[in-house]
Length: 326
Image (cartoon, rainbow, N blue to C red; front, side):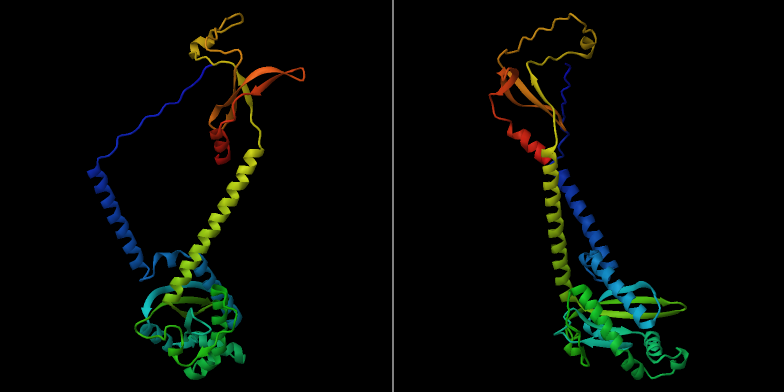
């Protein structure tokens, strides 16, 4: 039987100087890319941008709320997202129909706002009037009518994202909201644009940045743990499947190494001397993904009037480990 032996060669090892230069240049490149990503994200950490479950849930809650509040299924797009100070976040909400929420019940979502077009449409739906008839309504009147809609959206977002089941409570004083909206605290300010047929409205969210960072870190850890657990179960299932599968065992007296040309000349009557054979010893080999490997040895005998192989050595531990790890 011809036998092919695979060899390997090692490449050149780079010098320490070259390796150091390449590492330094690579680090500079990574730092530059990371810096650009942070700048493009308007101060938002990459981990926060990567958590797609957060952004998808927030967008879904907003779309469903808009459909219930305005009576129209909107097309929704993320208009902007940036990290701002508490002063800037408060100014943005105060310029619109803004609402703030008590930090005791809403430690993550500190406030939100509807633009004037959204406040008018909400009032028109609640009062069963045309939008045009409320175009000159006072901003205070529109904000009062929109307060329940703001609470509904805050409750939906808080329950959907942070699993906060108790009702969200509004507060007239921004100082009672998470972070108190002072200059020393940061907020993630997110703006969505809602296309309602021919009209466009906007919604803003102000999340307490420190709370959101802890939430993102916890979510990423949970996702990594779930992934590792799933990988463990998948690996165990694969190992069980492999152990239950079948392989071919060969009892080999001796092996010869011949060229392909010599094999081609074999014919009936050819004598092949087995110079290394031991009549009392057989090698037991098994088929694996890496080819046929020896797993033990034994001796030929008779058992229950049949030729049989009796193992004289234990099965190779490397073989068992290879099967489980494959």
